[in-house]
Image (cartoon, rainbow, N blue to C red; front, side):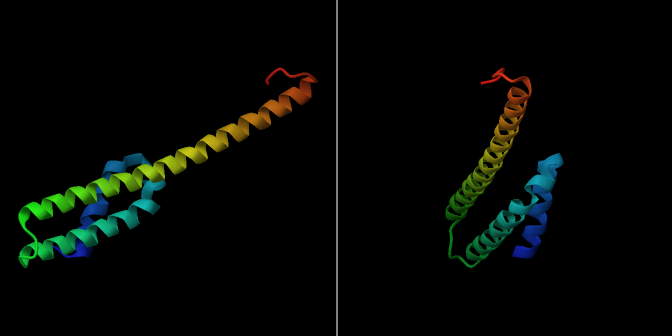
Length: 109
């Protein structure tokens, strides 16, 4: 059975490849999430090999981990999207105010 460090190396490489050009943006939160998954998978593997978990239980736990990982990444993406929206709105508000002031009337409401 692979240990958590070995699983982490495999998982992080897979995540890096899947993220492609977005890896730099997702790296920080992905590393922590990948380590968590690697640790939990290692424990599941140990539990299975020791007879503590059945094959069906391990499959169910793995699906739960997958869904948790998706939820974490979705929450992080929403946070980034929220920041992007605030930046765009702030920039457009500043442009509107500058343009309206320069023209002396409200061209943009």
